[in-house]
Length: 196
Image (cartoon, rainbow, N blue to C red; front, top):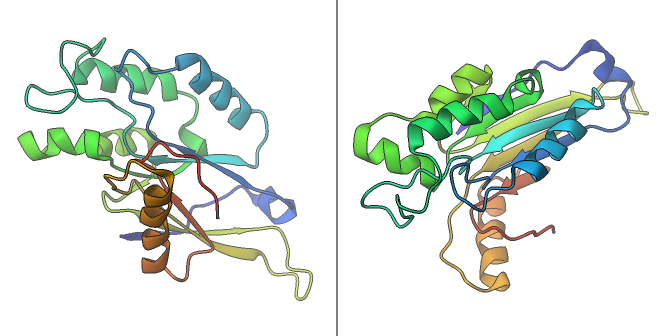
């Protein structure tokens, strides 16, 4: 796990709110990838200076010959997915705080040792760790002493074979228990929308 303090703009000391959007489980290359939804989220992030994102794995579908996903169903191969991802994310580079990988990208790493999320994070220019990133986010002013308010935000792709919402929630809670200092824990993989 990587600990990272991103550099925010000077005006962050005046912000009362800061938004972090987890961009995860996009599955670029899968025919069900919703580019329209991605583009509306991208536009929303870019509309205000206090909106950021973390890349939380499975951005790319990465169907390989021996993987669960079918190479015959993907609409582009992994190389094309990476190139297309760069096109989609162009303009967001300054808003991405950090990145981690997902089980879909790990398919290529297992087969070839090439970590495409590491390559993508390098192109974006953000901090990267395949296991997860703990961010120290400072913005605004504490009313007691005027110093910036500090939050610990941990994100990892996660893993779970759970089919029911309770099992998915339990998998996320287990991640939160491992990082007890985190004010916010972001986990993906299950494709479930959970907040607690």
